[in-house]
Length: 241
Image 1 (cartoon, rainbow, N blue to C red):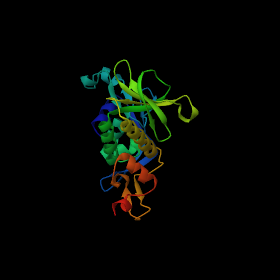
Image 2: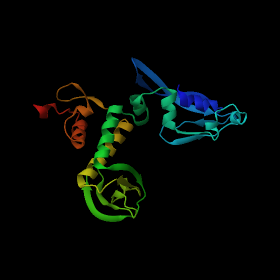
Image 3: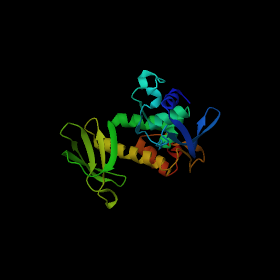
Image 4: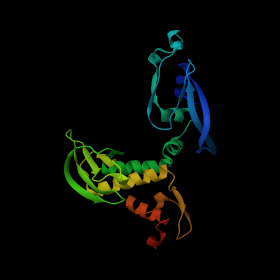
């Protein structure tokens, strides 16, 4: 437990540990992560979500009695993932495994790929209007995507047809006008993040060709090439011969 945990407790909140979530590597062993909740002085219990959403801890009666530091007069604002990280003393790898279901190595790579193509965010939702300037045909079951910008200048790519026959479409925001390759790579990034998050694929696998245990980032080539070979459970060893 660290400083953030102590500050929350000083406001009159008591931490409760619930069901096990997962075990993450910690030093030479593992740390068991459990669902966290906090109980306020009035008895109300609030569950700490397993995500990066913000959360607020209002100042309690202890402050009004002059017990707490003045900097906590209005309570404390933080995020759910910061609480887990501080409470369990998680390093970057443990934090990434708990909240994204993949290692810090994979997160660093995917974040770097997002920065390379200017990808800011993506989500599924109802269609939004914008100034369409082009249209790209991309893979991964998305089909055609309209490319353009909003009135405020932000760049966007939005699927031209609903996903899975529903009203929702895929929408991605970019810091610059994306090329067709940028959009295709963004779709691949989305697929990799979702597959790892949902446990559809693992970072580590046994190659069908050489029989060796490999990490998906050991596969040579672009992110699209890595995905193609990973889906075949191949590390690229045949291509290197």
